Image (cartoon, rainbow, N blue to C red; front, top):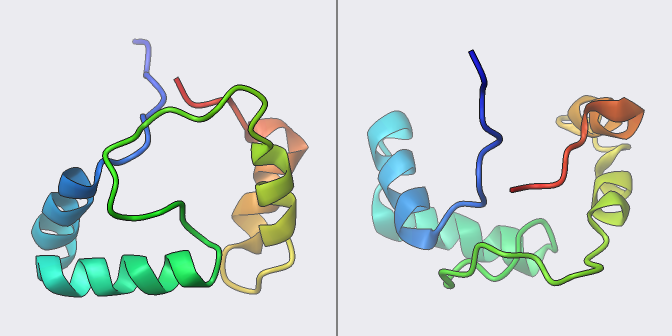
Length: 87
């Protein structure tokens, strides 16, 4: 069975998933997304764009996260060959 890589989340999809899976309100979700954007962890959260510009350096973003105590291990797995460009 072939498993497709996920596409980037649209804002509305982010709100739906956070509500359904985490029981977080839409307003709270967007507050969290805004803070993550301000800290440089997310692209602008209030857009419906799901395409990256040609030449966008995702590897550099992954490298920046490799030392994080919570999710650095995941970033290191991506660095070690687990990364696939989003479809």
